[in-house]
Amino acid sequence: MRKKDDEKKNCIKSAVMKLMLEEGFQGTSVSKIAKTAGVSPATVYIYYENKDAMLREIYKEYAEDTYQYLLDSLSLDMSGKEITAELIRRYYIFIIEHEEVFHFIEQYSSCPILHSSCGAMKGLSDLNNLLTDLKKREILNNYSNDNLYAILFSPVKFIAKKHDSSEIASERLEELISMVQRLILKD
View 1: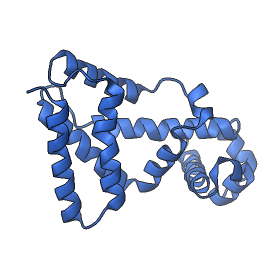
View 2: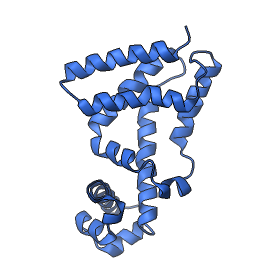
View 3: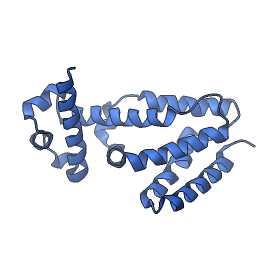
């Protein structure tokens, strides 16, 4: 794609995210997206077949970017404590620095359109493989990956949403890391 095309597509993606967060899926039309993006409706259809496909593709791209962000700083030579601390800290930073993307992913993560046709995501598979490997290496307790996700990530959302002063949030985050490590790491 040419640079100009990338800019148009990015404008469309930003418009989709903004409008769907403000007005929901049903309240967001292709004409509103085009107007917000500063392009014609025909241009939107160059990039996306329809509104369902648009939501699927944009959601999947942002979700994959999130998983990649979480996994990029990890290595297999890290200890269990280092891995859990890094996952929790990175997720917190992601939520704070990419608030709109985070809310978009959260809002549409349970959307039926996505579950029926979004397909397997590489980032989720990589994270599952990491957790499974850590359990096989007896670094993590043998809990289901769904429960590990809940323990690792759900409390981080709560701390990030409160987002008091950075000092208070940092203290809460460090306390959370310690709690999670005691819960999920083998002795």
